[in-house]
Image 1: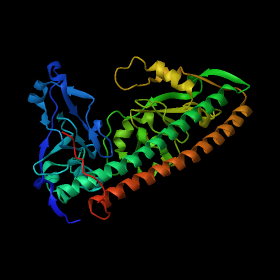
Image 2 (image 1 turned 180 degrees about the horizontal axis):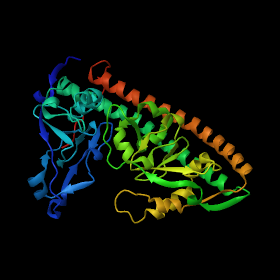
Image 3 (image 1 turned 180 degrees about the vertical axis):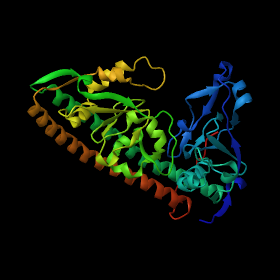
Image 4 (image 1 turned 90 degrees about the vertical axis):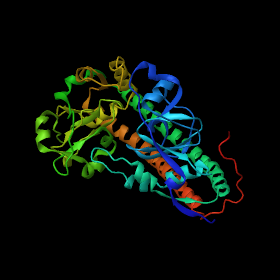
Length: 403
C-alpha cells in the first residue's frame, strides 16, 4: 500500500465545540449534542446522544457539524473517537474534524484510536490535560488513496465487530459471576445457625468519617485514597497521589489507621477495602468513608457483607431521594441492619467459607479479564497493522457512510 504521511490539517478542518447557557429555550430540541460520555474508549459510529439542543442553543453556545465528521475527545479523557452518522452539535470537551478532501472518516477514526497514547502525550495543562486545536492539526496520519481507505475501513468494521462481540460476551460473563458471588454470599449469611440482627453503629469504636472535601495534590505529602483506589488498595498503595500534610491535618478525623474499613459512599455505593498497615496516616476523599470497629468485630466479614443484596437494598432505600449521585449519610449507614452469626466460632467458619467462595470467583474472573486484555491488544494490533499497510485487505469491498 502506497501512502503519504500528512498532518491532519491537510485533510480536515478542526472545529471547536461549546455548551449553551442552561436556559430552557436552548435545550431539548431535535439537534443531537455530543459529549465524550456519548462515545466510548474504542472507535465507533455515533447517531444518538444523551442530550439535545434547539437551533437557538446551537446558534448561541455550541457548534454544528455535518455527518461524516470525526468527533475526538480532547480533555478528560483525551482520545475517545467517533464518526457522527447524522449532523450534530458537540461540547467543548470535543473537537470535530470536518473533511476538506475525499476521505473515508472511518479510516481516520480507527487511525486516531490507534494513536490514543500519542494524542494523550500531546496534551498540556495543570488542572487537566487538554489537546489543543493547533496540536491536533499537526498530528501526522497515514493517507492512502480514498479507495484504499474504504477497503481498510470495511475490513476493520468487520474484524473489530467480531472482537467487540467476544469482548461483550466476556463482560456479560463477568456480570454473571458477580451476580453468582452475591447470591452465594446472601445464602451464606442467611443460613448461619446463630444469625442475629444488629445495627452497624453498635459495632463501631468511633463514628464513621467522611474525608477531604476539596483536595490539592502535591508531589510529596500524605497519601490520598479515592474511590477507584478501593478496587485494589494494597496493590495501589505505592502509586497513590498525595495531598499536603497541612490539608490532611485539617481533616484529622479521617486519617486512616490499619484495619479501617474504607467504603465508597457517593455514586457506586459499597466499594470497599481494608486499610493495610502501609497506609497508616493516609487520608481519604469526600466520596469515601472510614469505619473503625471494636476489636472483637471481624472487619473482613463486614466487608463481605457489603457485597450482599441485604446491604444494597438498604443503600437503595437510604439514597432513594437523591436527585444527583446517590450519597449515603453517616447516620443512615450506622442504622443499617447487619445479620450475621452471634457465635464467634461460627463467624470464623463463615469467614473461611466466604474466602473459599471469593477465591473461586476471583480465579474465574481473572481468566475472563485476561481474555478481555488479549482481545483489546488484538484490536489495537489489528488496527495498527491495517492502517499502516502491514496486512493485505484487498478482498474487502468499499461501503463508506451511506448518504
